[in-house]
Image (cartoon, one colour):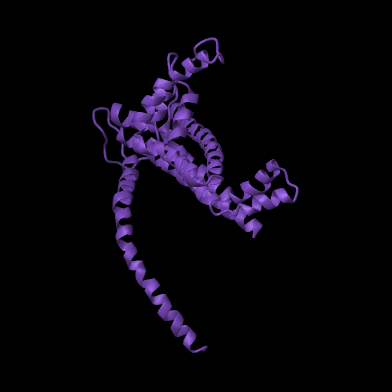
Length: 295
């Protein structure tokens, strides 16, 4: 038996090693579609912008120096990170409670709720923007509902505010966070919650000491997903937020289309990619660190 074991392992392992060749087309596709544009973007960020043209080939750090020293650009970076963090928190909070509600349901009701969760994914971003622009203004549906119900004596206008921008961004990223958290909740045994209650724990204590720790992986993944997704959106932020809400996405399109400064726009995009990559790596590091502590 001891002599046949290595042969058996080799025979079982050879098909698995052979399947690696099947990944080559996917890897080549990723390198061509995503890798080459990223390399070109980085290279463009080192060029210079002439007064009467788009760019001049060079190897200069001037764009990065300008980006990291100009108060206007630093404000755009800070605003983007702030809006993304707030949106990620609001989205994950709402997505978790909705996912928990769906998780506890069975049959047709569960299917209906899943269909409702899929709704925002079937609507384009432009349609979402138009819908919220109808909902938030002074004569919009929200103001009409508040005045008609007696909750407010005067009409309100939430359009062109940070609140409207956060709501719009949360609406777009909500389905992705919802299904991420729901997939984790589906792997949790509900009997654990019942056992916690049978042992005398209150529903609130069961929620924080049993359910949340078991679902923390999905919560962390959803938070990272919402943060990354929000960092790259600029149309919703500009359409629903105030004019002073300059994000990195807005600054990229302004430099690219209005000022025709492709090198500076590329530098901003590179910094945006670096921030997103750092956030993902930090989330993975914290997740593995906490996992090793509990091991």
